[in-house]
Amino acid sequence: MRIFPDLLEDKTPGEEFNKSQEFTDEIPTSDSIRAVGGTSGTTVVAEDQDGTDVSSSVVLNKVVSGTKLQARLKIPSGENVYLVTYTTQMANSQELFKKYLIVRVRTPKAI
Image (cartoon, rainbow, N blue to C red; front, side, top):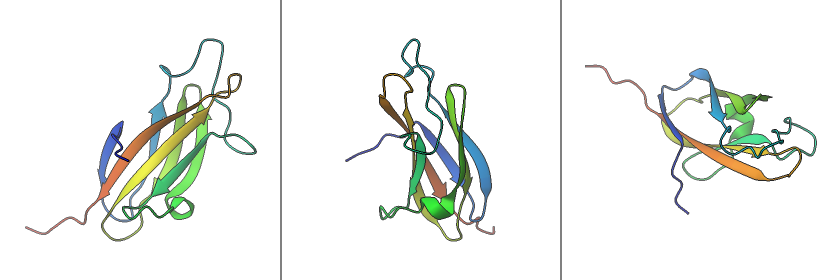
């Protein structure tokens, strides 16, 4: 399966940052994004370039804020490429929508 990311970030090992995905265009009229937790399908998952789920060490926090799903991400040491999948579940229709972030991690080289 080929994924075309909605966002692309270049980061260095150990970097910690917030990144959100906007779902305004996906939310049906009179609906909203379910909060994270419990039985909600709203979540953020991270996989390394081998397809291994590394969410427990990369995704520190996730929260819904209006029409956005935000995550606090921490990049482990070492160079890698991460696919971060933001999934939102609608409160009324129960529809699921996904957006993707690619994080490329590179160690800065001395000149």
